[in-house]
Length: 307
Image 1: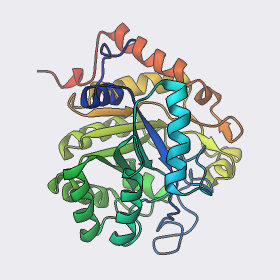
Image 2: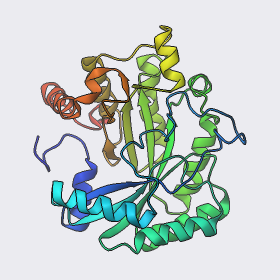
Image 3: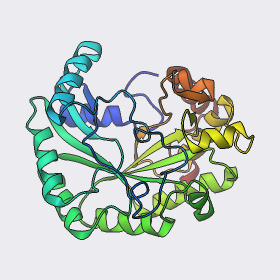
């Protein structure tokens, strides 16, 4: 489906309206860790998180933030013809440091030519008041998104995946962040072990109620070297089939407030690190299937909320 005709509010279209050109995210590893790894909240991290942080493959942490951004800018300009870029602090918990260190890193990123804004990924329990104040300052002065990992709105699931926080912590972080004028994008994983379809879809209602500005959906996939891989090998976890995931995404979108920006509908996975499901390697095919299923249903984001 071409840009501008999607049945959901795509982030790419929002960026084009905001900047008038193609905009790409450049992922950055700024050397953070996570309270769920360093012992302050837990050890070992979430069961799906690998040694480099969840979803952070392809980043070159041996380079400075400036060098990472310059390298990414050159590659994405050649590949996609992008004219502007967002520095995406992705690996681990990117507010897990004193405000003065955060400011230095964020300002370093914004000083790189072509960087038009910031996306900062973190956890609900890494947002003390001084950090919220700092992020609110960036939200006032530049294009800014705060990405918050929730993954599930079911507390027993958060305990099972060793998240290290509960749903209430996420809700409180969203209230404080949105109250300070910060746009928040929630991360959700569909297909986590032990959850029913009804429980997964109920998350959409919670996000509507909290007033988040964006959502990232991700299929549960199993990466090498994770606790999840061990569970998968023992037969304790199964992954959704592609068509089941497509249907679940469409159900979720239909229940989601149409004002919420969709930052992602399917996650990426490097072939040399993926254990399952193999359809995770065919992202374009999955996105096309989602568009096709919405069209078949004659529905779109928020359809189930109408009337």
